[in-house]
Each structure stands twice: as structure tokens, then as C-alpha cells.
Image (tube, rainbow, N blue to C red; front, side):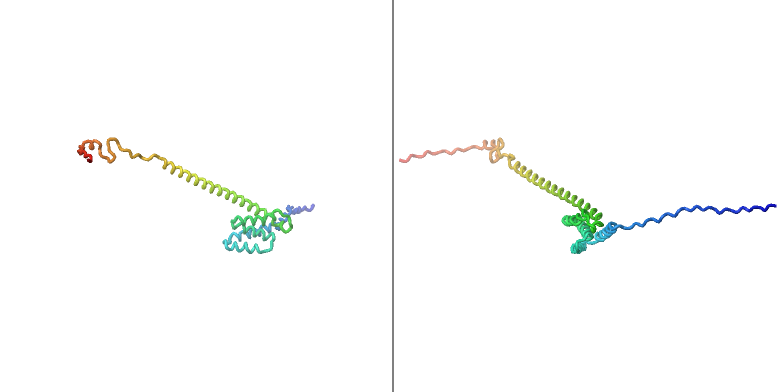
Length: 198
């Protein structure tokens, strides 16, 4: 008798998917670090009361000029809402925004943002100043026109005809009726001729 054959099971085939490569870790660039630091500093400056903000401006002004200090000082000056200080802030960030020195390169994005913000704010304030000047000029013109109108009215009142004091017909100057005076008999006095001197 032939020996029975035993079928040996074949091992299952397990499909393996290749492992996904690890996500690359993004390394913060110097510009990223500079922008983050500037934003954190801006939030701190916004929370300062006016007197402490003035002290911080004085402290930053006394420090050696660096791109980092210039950005911090420009943001502090922006918060003062003072036109003169805004011009000073523009003078601080404009060289950084346009320059290409290696130490300022990391601060250029923030400098460009600040410069655009300062220039737009300056343009709006100049426009507001012109509108206020036009309003003052209009108010002065209206005042002058009102004064001229009042002067013309005064001249018109002085030239208006006054009511006449003429006597009404049938009355005398003292108000007695003329007919009543006619009824009063008039007595004539007899004149005695004078003798001529001898």
C-alpha cells in the first residue's frame, strides 16, 4: 500500500508596507526667531502705562544702536501716537528695511512691516490735519460772512423810513378839534388912538 501523502500548509504571505520617512523637523531661521522676539516684545510694550512706556523709550534710546534695539525702539515710539515720534521711528526702521548688512538681514521682514505701518499711519494723520485745516478755514469764512450780513442788516435798519409826525386832518397841533376852536368867540379889544405930542 502506498503511504498517504501529507500536505504541508504553506505559511501565509504577509504584505509589509514600507515605513513612512520621518517628517523633517523645521529649523527656525534667524528671521523667524527675530520676528517672534519682536512680537513678544510688542505685546509687553502694549501693556505698559504711558509713564512706563516713556521710561522704556528712554532706556532703549540710551542703548548702543543695533538692529534689535532699533526695532524695539520703533515699536515703542509707534505706541506713543505722537507724530514727531513716528517720524523718528521711520528713521530707525527705514535703513533696516532697505539695507542688506548681514546683521540686519534677520530683522528685515519685521522692519518692512513696521515701515509700511508707520508710513500708512503718517499718511492718514497728514490727511486728517488737512481736513481739520479745511474745517477751520470754512468756519472762519462762515463767521466773516455772518459778520458782513449783520453789518448789512444794521445799515438797512438805519436807512428805513421813520414814522412821520404829521398832524391829522381836522386837528390842531395840540390835538384840539378845529371846529371847537371856531366856536369860541373872539373878543376884540378897542384900541385907543394916542395923541401926538404937542
